[in-house]
Length: 170
Image (cartoon, rainbow, N blue to C red; front, side, top):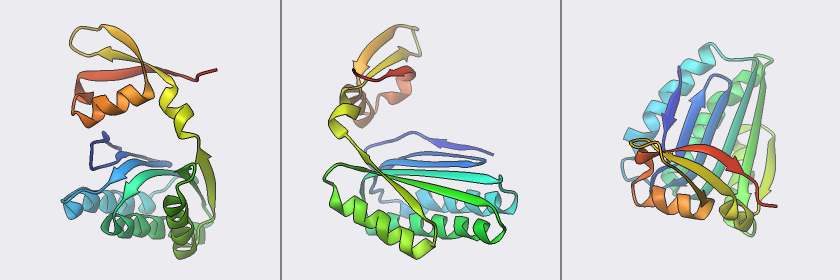
C-alpha cells in the first residue's frame, strides 16, 4: 500500500506509505481531481488501519488554491487519528523568505488541528548539494548539483535516471 509519484513541472513529488506521507514541489496541475482524488482515497484507506505514528512532510514551492483544498482535506482526515490516541507529526518546510508558503502552513495548521513543526529551508544550500545519479539504461553515474537535477526533472528526463546518493556541501 504505497504511492510514489515523481515530481513534474506542475505536480509535486508524492510518497505515501504506511506511517509516512511526503508532498514536495509545485502543485498547479490542471487535472486537479485526477491527481488528488486517488491520494484522498489512499488516505481514507490508511486511516482505517494506521500506524501508531504518522509523519507528514510537506515542502511546497508553489501551490494553487485548488491543491490547497485537497491538502487540507488530507490533513483533516489524518487529524482523526489523534482522536484514536495515535500520533500525527507534520513537518512544514518552506524556503527562506517565502512568507506566502509559511502563512499557508500556519493557516492549514489552524484548520486541521494538528500542531506543525515549521522548518525553514536554505534554498541556496539545498540547490548546491551534490547528487550522484545513475543512467538506468547504461549504468553510468554522474555527480551533479541539486539545481541541475531540478532542470532534469523540469525537462522531463528524470525517468531516465535514479538518484544513488545525496551529499551535503561543506
